[in-house]
Length: 102
Image 1 (cartoon, one colour):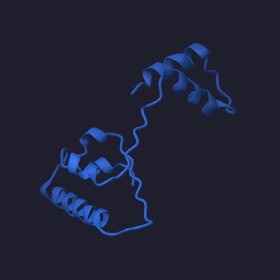
Image 2: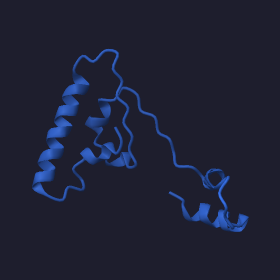
Image 3: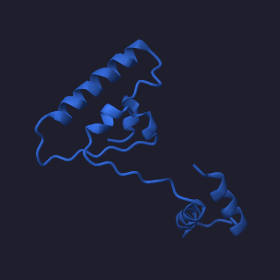
Image 4: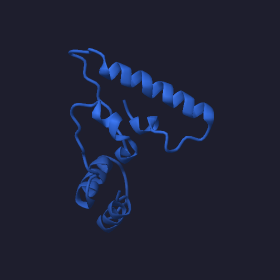
């Protein structure tokens, strides 16, 4: 499941949306607490701080993967540009990697 923070209620824009999110979250929590031996649920979040603690406790293992640093972002950008016809200089690549922090 990607964007699991969507189930948080911190950015709800309407009463209908809140109702839908509450129902989905309740159903998910019921499934997480039922006997699902051999079934693994993997969830991803861009904003783990938005998830409430009781919800997070339902996941037995949590792994935090921090965003890449400048050097790694530069390497990723260089790799993505490999094989493409471009005129991006090393200085521009460094600038882009610095501007994409966070």
